[in-house]
Image: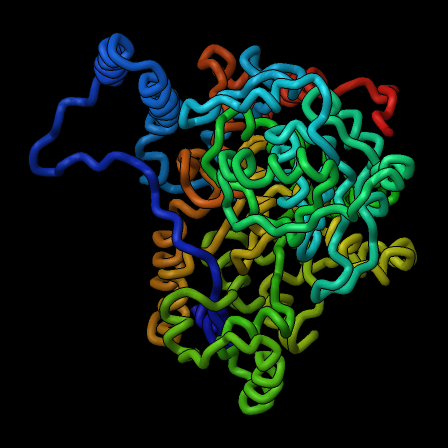
Length: 556
């Protein structure tokens, strides 16, 4: 009992992550209801579509699109009750029913020169159906590695919408991390161009001869956040056609979440297949994974976003006294638009990142033993070793890239984005991924791990965990652990957390998750990602989507 109480006695912090509620039907306890007949509902919708089609054209297409979305949701309702019983903390029992799929369908033309149908049943104008490109699209990505990754994936889709020739995106060199790495320093350019050749024409640069022939420099503009395809067609395309070369600046989250499923799949092809790290990054990342596997059959990767700038921006207090208040207060002055906030209220509302100690308490409460191996992915931790010590006490088998890589890491040390890429690889390969925040890396990895077989991904239930940590000294360990387990149901990376329209698409890639036929999972012999047969099946499907490595580069 004294050991359990000791777990609660370290000074604490808070957390940051938006609340995800379980997505399921609730039946009345007093009056059981007859299950809904989905066949009847879909039949009625099809009947309505037929009737409406007698009087109008494109309206029926709208309803058909929503009908397809409804049918897609049906798969997840099968898992009703998934979070009612004890949960396996290392892997999802229901992951075997779903797998990542982003292969283009027959309805998606191989050439961007043909018309595409959007959710609102509009068609691309004649200009998009022309055989030649409408011009060169320059993209200036924004933020750190993972924020830029979302921008690059979206840029591929925007280039497809505009029938533009995409120039290899320019990465942000002036963000907080001040990394001067270019696209080719982080991602395999030849692979990126070859993989997407059937979807979008991509070149390394605008031809010099073409640039010299231009009367004016490239036109520069910034589109609003979450812009739908129609905005690009109405506002951006005319400029591109008129100027031939167009640059979109600060390109992050500039494309709407809710777009046509075929365009969503293109998003997934770009993000999960085309964006492959360079060979040096990939080799070192895999080397670290191998070293973790040599020590333990399975391990946890913990992403700690606990840098001074992030803590200052949050406005939260983490127990460091006047020294912390003064230091973070000075950093906070960088953002002139930030207003003063109540630190306790921010914590109570779940808007503060978890401290390393709180992450450790959450994991122990969920059932992870203190002999579990953890890999900690992080940048500069505020407070250094003193801040990390409580987590080390809870999990002595504690490792970082600096501890595992030794001399191999030296060439990467000046480049924060390349270091982040190495952490990305290890976190992606881990058995369990845990985050203390709701930042870009947390979202991107959560989406990728769902796509790659719903690997266990633990996100803190921010709105419940914050108040709980404020009251933890008032309860014994067993009570605390019971509450954590209850609060975290629905935040463990289970398939039923997915639903169309929920959150950022990069975090919830619902259009790229397919249901495995029941016959493939009977007796756990076929199609199960945890079995060798299942892994072989997934590998074969992945190979079908990859082009030949020797494909000729499409460069002007």
